[in-house]
Length: 186
Image (cartoon, rainbow, N blue to C red; front, side, top):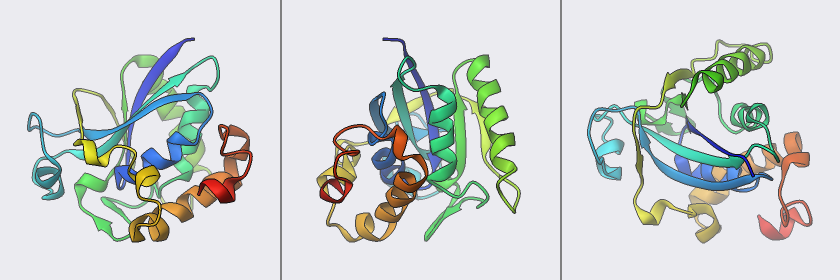
């Protein structure tokens, strides 16, 4: 196994976490905060919009099973990269679209992927591409949020449509048991 990781922000981290948990080769998805100045921020502090952090997920994946390019392709599908500091009803810099890379190869892959995604968008992509400085893990109750709360209104109204779009566009990347009977999982 050749493990790699990258950090993404694209609105609420519950959405990103739920989507990446469905992907074959993804070993772990951790919700957290990054891109701000405050050490050890809390959810309430980040939600205030005053810390500079974005809600993000750290995606750890087996690069022998899924490529960084494929991981990036999923990113462009599961949020609106043309929406500045907003995803749906979630507004503020904490919901911005951001890719946080750890090395020059990831930076190049992210920029190349952004240019490819731009060809498919009518509006300019506003996604930030920056070096990952620090990643702060979110509070425990944010972990596996969709899996633990599938009936919750936010999960039904906001997350499920994103997962449906992912299933439609990238069904070949889905891990078992998601490929077997998606209607019973989600």
